[in-house]
Length: 364
Image (cartoon, rainbow, N blue to C red):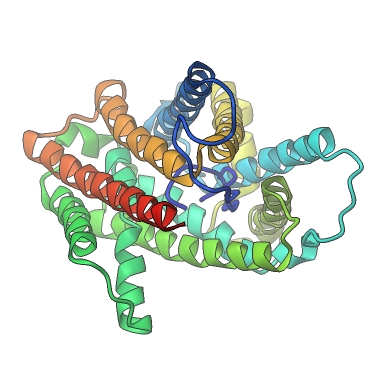
C-alpha cells in the first residue's frame, strides 16, 4: 500500500524514507522546545490515527459480510491496486505543489522503477492476502519480525557478526511470534476468517517481508545513484508501475484467460457497485495510507528515522489493542504475553540503535 515502506515503520508501496541526521525533540532544527514538542505530538497523532484507522478498515474489508446475501469481499488484492492509484495521484499532486517547475536533473527517471516495482507489487499482495488465513493481530506481529530474516541472511550469507543484545532482541521477537502462532486462536476470531490456515497465512507474511527487504535495498541503490531523488519521486515511480502491473493482472488477464485464478478487477468493481460502503471503505483505506505518508516524511525530516521507528512500532502495538477491543478479536492472557515479548524485543532494538547513534555522535 501506501507509500514508503513498506523500513521499520508504516508506509505504502515501498517508498524509501528521507535520511536526515537523527535528532531528538530538543536537538537540531531550530525552534523552541514547546514548538518542537507540539510538532512531534502532531506527527504522533497523524501517524497513529492514519494507520490505526487504516488497519481497522483493512480488517473490516477482510472479515465483514456485506449486503443482503452476506457475501465476503474476496478481492483483497484489489486494495493494493486502489492504493497504487491513489498514491500515484497523491504523489503527483505533492510534486507539483512542492517541487514546482524544478529541474529533473539528478533525479531517477520513471523507467528505473519498473524492476523493483515487481517485488513491490507481489510482496504487499501476499501480506494482505494473508488476512484470509490469519487474524489481523497475527499479521501485524508477523510483519513486525523483519529483523529475523535480516539477521539470518546477514549471518549466513555475509558473515555479519551481531552483538549478544541484538541476538536477544531477535530471540524475543521470534519467540513471541512463534508462541502466538502456536497458541489456540479463539473460535470467534476463526469464524471471521475466510479460510483459516495459519501455516499459509504466516508463510505469506514472511514472504512479504522477504520481498520488502529486496524492495527497500533496491530503493536505497536508486537513491544513492540519483541523490536528488526525493521521497515523492520514488512514491510516484513505484505507484505508476504498481498501477500498471496490477491493472494487467486484474483487468487484462481475466479478459485473456477465462479461468483466471487470481483476483478479478471487474468482479471487485461490481462488488463495490452493489455495496457502496465497500467502495467508501476502500477509498478511506487508500486515503489513510497517503496521508499517513505525509506524517512519516514530516517526522523523519524534523526528528530523524529513529523517532519515526519508535512512533510506528508503538502504533503497531496499539493496532493490536484496537483490533482486540473494537473488532472483537479476543486474545488470551498467553497471547498477550506473546505480544509483549515481540514489542519488548522491538523496544530493546530501538534502544540499542539510539545508544549506538549516541556513541557515534559523541565521537564526532
